[in-house]
Amino acid sequence: MKPKVTTEAHLLDTVHRHEWKHRDSWRALRILSEFVDGFDTLADLEPAVSVFGSARTTPDRPEYALGVELGGALARAGFGVITGGGPGTMEAANRGAREAGGVSIGLGIELPFEQKLNDFVDVGIDFRYFFVRKTMFVKYAQAFCVLPGGFGTLDELFEALTLVQTKKVTRFPVVLLGVDYWQGLIDWLRDRMLQAANIRKDDLDLMLLTDDVDEAVAHIARECDYLRKAAEV
Image 1: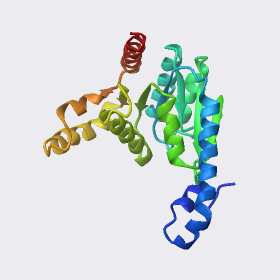
Image 2 (image 1 turned 90 degrees about the vertical axis):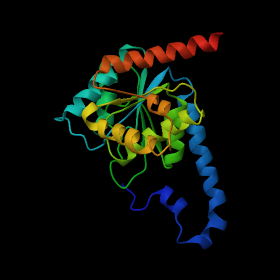
Image 3 (image 1 turned 30 degrees about the vertical axis):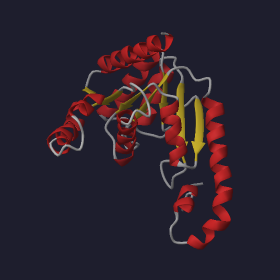
Image 4 (image 1 turned 30 degrees about the horizontal axis):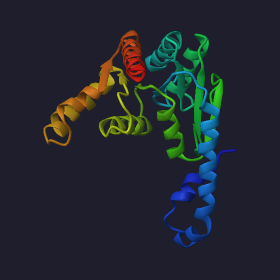
């Protein structure tokens, strides 16, 4: 059943402040249990790529076909595919991975809508807290692929860019797939944010923008190979 008020909404509630003292310490244990469950489930995961995109993408749209193509290409290149486990683009990437014989992972989230894990997930975990789930997306992935999406997709994109920019993660490739969709954002970052000196010119190089799945996967494989060789030195 879909909850009207999620567990995370209770945690972040600012109305019933008098309850914090009595309940938040117990909630911390629930949060810890989610981290433990995620770590235990994903600890032996092969190299993987997190794929993001809209849950509202229908199977008849080009973005869905792109997700299937991407999931399959990543699987054939030896990467597991991690998504939010939901419908739309997430389902497409999981489907592509499974049909190509790869590992398909879904990290679901408790929501009043779009909650059920899709049918193409082989390894699935349901989380109550976004921040725990976001940790798993980064910790167990070697790269992010971002397809057209909404607020949640933008949240994951800029989370990744911030982590790379601040060197919380090292040499973490971020690929935007869908030139027509993302070009306006890239233009705004260059013409507004860069011109205002709020980012550096090389920050724009943290992203690869392309329509070509093969180019995206080759870029990720090349970056991961560099990291592997650097670790061996």
